[in-house]
Length: 409
Image 1 (spheres, rainbow, N blue to C red):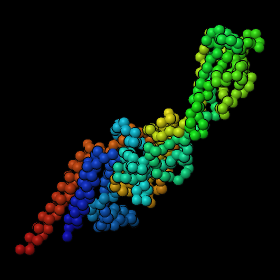
Image 2 (image 1 turned 180 degrees about the vertical axis):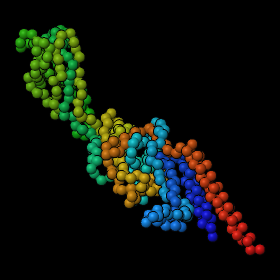
Image 3 (image 1 turned 180 degrees about the horizontal axis):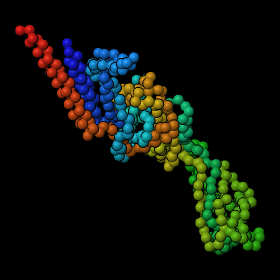
């Protein structure tokens, strides 16, 4: 039989494969995180008709003469260039900007994907649309250990932030240096004493008020201003002085005469000033808090999930891990917009986003397919014409065979 007949057949097979790959790309033009594939051809073995000859004596060398035996598919490679971003505004929709893959676990197998359309299941686990569990590092007590083994990321509504007892309260602002002495009788002016309170917490998260009264007292040194700190609920006459705050002549804090620890709370007066005609003293802050439940979350560029709790505080509740490969083109498609590692992709380099060649993370957006329709339709034409050319080779070979048959009448 004619060699051209089999070369034409190989052309049909190869271009049919190209059509299959191109058709699949077009079908997935709107698939989140899909990476388009590209078909590469190579020639097959060539039959030697005449071997090469070396130059010798008075004769020159001769080149080899070979006849090719057709074409075959050399490779079908995935294009891992980034797809366009689609803004969704949904916190559970996540996108990788740069290299890397989300790590998911399904059926005990670790897979990798660029599709970040995640949801929460009934247990509060972060999952893909087909139920694969998103992997990362759960936070323990608001601390994420990225050196720990990977685990399922969970964000159940029952997640609680533990209560924290108040150990320090800070008072800031200004005590008026020109306030009248209020240590005897009825105060001569409202500014003579000033009551301030702040809510503090015990170890169980129970809130109580820490109340302090600042009373203007006679100056020990001319030009300085002095205030006694007492408890407004103290009925003793005179009430017990918890501490005394003294200001220099220029209004700066001289020093409390005694460090104040009241009701197990260390009170910090270091931010107070004592200028005239200005009353701005306030209880600025305290470091305790009540228990709270998870209300919502946001995500940092490194994949850290920051939970917002009902007590008004925020803390990390987990961190999403990313994987990267020395040869991403060596990954094998596993369906569901996922990939699995192979011997030629190398092992996944797992870590946080933004380091080790891994891209940054963002929420509220999805990575769309990177299929270029203009290129794919052009590939359809190329594959169609190649298929037609191969079929014409077969037709022509058949006509030649027919002529040979007709030699014998």
